[in-house]
Length: 579
Ligand SMILES: *[C@@H]1O[C@H](CO)[C@@H](O)[C@H](O)[C@H]1NC(C)=O
Ligand SMILES: *[C@@H]1O[C@H](CO)[C@@H](O)[C@H](O)[C@H]1NC(C)=O
Ligand SMILES: *[C@@H]1O[C@H](CO)[C@@H](O)[C@H](O)[C@H]1NC(C)=O
Ligand SMILES: *[C@@H]1O[C@H](CO)[C@@H](O)[C@H](O)[C@H]1NC(C)=O
Ligand SMILES: *[C@@H]1O[C@H](CO)[C@@H](O)[C@H](O)[C@H]1NC(C)=O
Ligand SMILES: *[C@@H]1O[C@H](CO)[C@@H](O)[C@H](O)[C@H]1NC(C)=O
Image 1 (cartoon, helix red, strand yellow):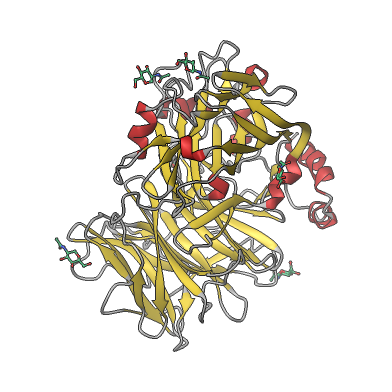
Image 2 (image 1 turned 180 degrees about the horizontal axis):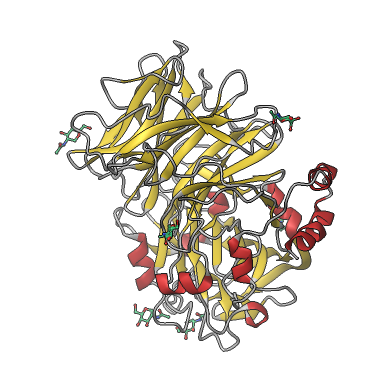
């Protein structure tokens, strides 16, 4: 039965190679989640976000025409445990083939879990994985694995190094705070560098190690960076970005017109800083440090944690994606049979003024766009609401360009240090301003008792304009037991301008049953929401645009598409189960 299912799906993939694979007798066995999912009604299961049964983030990579994605996976249940490395591959970052598990906890140095890590491609093109093992004593150690057969483009099987564990917690570092090796990069001296997330005296640290051969590592006398304003850092990521243009850079690139980004995961978010890195001295001079600015930079101001980036050499871009956890309870996860999913992969680059990143979903996502509706030059008077109909509002992609007139008539906001989340709660959709609130009501029930509002509000500051973007989930579900936060981010737009008469504002929103990813301010502000409506599910979900400010504005254009389901197909042979 599952073989039949898979064969049908293969027909859509148009990849002769996989017919070959199947006709060569590869045994196609459904994963447990597929068996399980057929029995349960699944209003929250996504259609085009990557989802295995259970996942957490590991190192993605691009190797010989194939995108590989490794993820933290529990083969035995919907909750965290028995952590292994799931492995999937894709040719377009949208449709996926689920392969066999790449790493299972079966050695003294990883028997309590094969935790997060990263893939690095060596100069001669060989992929290597560094990962954290939880050993027999539940101490965190770092291990190496490499492909069993380098000629296999799918890199199906992985072997653990006989040198493992390569690294154990040094003196002064807690054995339970030493994990998540980054992708390695090479310095001017030809030696590899890698950072490991840690905490020393309750301060977040990126411990720096160097190695000539990837086996023997020595700890650098100083960390790459640390912060006494944060605690434990998980999943550090460190990579170069071009000062000009959108092209991504390989992790080891050095030279002029480059800045570096350091990301660390803490306090439930992925925070990052931008600075100048010297590959000779390993000195990293940051522009604004973690928690030092009025709004500390985050990749995403909603649910988005333990992300990783990688360089896609084929398309010359750096791609970021992340684990998105659930906002319902463990009982719900067990009932659903799954927990956690992946964000849409995002291209990232440095903004023109060089002080933050810009993000946009990868172009390939557009392949899933189908039924389209389009509107142009619609005036949105103050207090108006209109329905965007003609698409599947629960599984959609929407791109809107708002056109704002008379920004100098915006409300005043002179205080520099404001909490955007609080501002979104106080100045909600019902609190009329001048320019805003305006935006969308998403996954809305017909009577609007359920909806998630993603909206903007423009403020006039001192010598600049500021844009508040909010995702208000307070009415996202009639279910009382699910999380319903309000997220917010405040951006300076058009600084050094007191008066501008017209400005356009682009908002892109992939919506997929229980996830809304909002890309606002042309990709400068991203908010991911997980929502669990009771009424606004499947065909019952609706979508509205609204303006509740006193001034009218216009929608220059609005395109909305129903989205096709991505193909996510198991092709792995069943491997021996975890003992
Ligand atoms: C881990 O796997 C074992 C089977 O080997 C299973 O009995 C146990 O429930 C699993 N634990 C979790 C948390 O899934
Ligand atoms: C390695 O992979 C290649 C390509 O898939 C295959 O032809 C070869 O037989 C494999 N070698 C081994 C030892 O499995
Ligand atoms: C925190 O670290 C900075 C250097 O990054 C140092 O100047 C400062 O004194 C430290 N503060 C505390 C309280 O340790
Ligand atoms: C909006 O905020 C006001 C007060 O700031 C509050 O009374 C009202 O209930 C809120 N409405 C919504 C829809 O959250
Ligand atoms: C606009 O605000 C009014 C109250 O001022 C509120 O009743 C209405 O629900 C709001 N509209 C939307 C679309 O939230
Ligand atoms: C909307 O209009 C802008 C400006 O004309 C254009 O750049 C953009 O591609 C249009 N977007 C859509 C989705 O049609």
